[in-house]
Image (tube, rainbow, N blue to C red; front, side):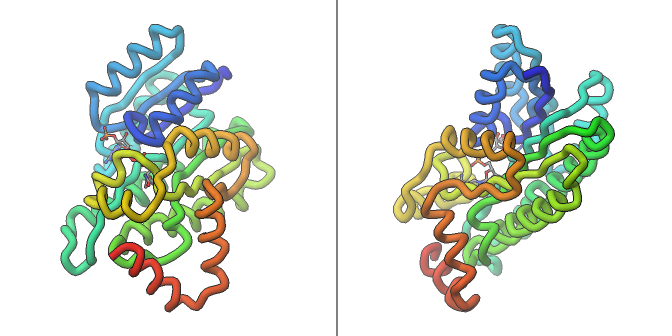
Length: 255
Ligand SMILES: NC(=O)c1ccc[n+]([C@@H]2O[C@H](COP(=O)([O-])OP(=O)(O)OC[C@H]3O[C@@H](n4cnc5c(N)ncnc54)[C@H](OP(=O)(O)O)[C@@H]3O)[C@@H](O)[C@H]2O)c1
């Protein structure tokens, strides 16, 4: 693969598995996360394998970050062929007791940065007549999430936005895929303050199988890719339940 792939949230969990997949295909990589030490060491290892690898260390919830990344890509002459908008986090607990700053940072990362990254790299893809974008949604994209209200709402946005632009872009050579994982064993659960509760209720999937599934969906240009049978059943099932039943069910599962 002679393509340039930009991956956000590249240092851990699902994003790191995407890095491994694209590295195994010989892609050139532009990696984004906050932890510069990890990014530098990853790039050194990738270059030692003969791959082109570069990084931008930044906090994507910072409003300047996407423009900084786009400017870096331009300066380095990198045309991004594949954009993986993966970075995201959640927060567990009732909204009334939540750290409001953290909720707003979450919206900035999960929604605003994902939208701006898409907006910044899409025109180049359209002009070249080819490109692929993968936005990481969630099974949470399909229902309201009492006890994680803002997170679920951000992921509903990701699914809605991705599906809408996937349709708009038909015929341009650019595809958009929304990958919707179920509960996955990554740093996400600890970051959201829900490690124990999560692992008690759900059988967590490994991030490698989520990324492998997402990669196949991305290369097929599939608009929505829900990982795992339980999540597929869940996403399908909520369509037939009254909304009150859905929010009660999610509340019971999460409280
Ligand atoms: N795990 C699950 O159960 C699950 C289920 C459904 C959907 N998802 C979604 O999957 C995506 C990946 O999550 P994960 O489970 O792989 O989580 P993870 O293990 O916590 O990894 C998150 C990655 O994003 C980076 N990151 C976090 N905040 C960032 C910020 N403000 N700016 C830049 N980079 C940032 C982290 O690196 P640094 O710390 O170095 O910045 C790390 O590389 C997220 O969008 C999440 O919502 C996860």
